[in-house]
Image (tube, rainbow, N blue to C red; front, side, top):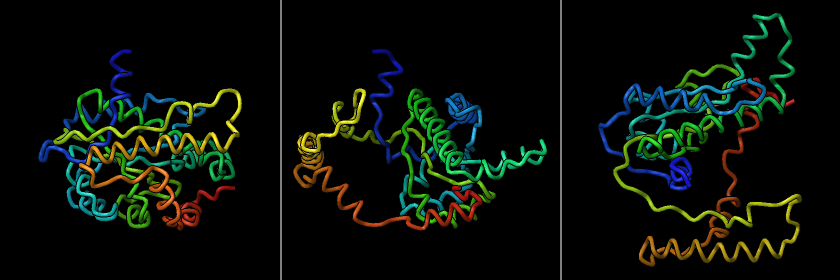
Length: 250
């Protein structure tokens, strides 16, 4: 065990930040440079990061993300975007026909993965400085409005936000799935009954966590949460939106 691993294993989402305590420019730069140090597929670097400092923009993003107060009240808010816009410009600069490639499903996946890798590096850097973070997928509730607000061009898709700041309250750490449910060796586990048994065990762990955290007011299970959430279709406009941004997923 070392300090880096301790930081990683100590992760939890923070949803309450000290008000009026912004990150310094040095902290912002360190976080972004840490993001840039992440691995990137074939050196494509297919992502961009937008820092939101304008209070009105933060308020509007918070509204679009289901009125989550910590989207508005934090030390700094970052929006991570899949970005193949600069690669279209490279095609013009170099006189190369790049559109079929950058409009492919493969390159879209590369952009998603690059952005996610960069974001997790940013998170670990922030947490190593004693800051708290919370990923915000709610910006995808209405990407048309987010795109207008941030003025992102074609081939740029805002994927998620990260609220970062000084924790005002430390949240509990939710137990993750058991190691042997996530880790497969050589081949994928095919025994469905084994899966179900492990999920039942995990349900008991999650129930206990909620009961202790809420003094018995909540005792739902992970599978009941997921079943309810997945039964509800959400953000089903995404394919058409992505294609409209000239990421045609060929």
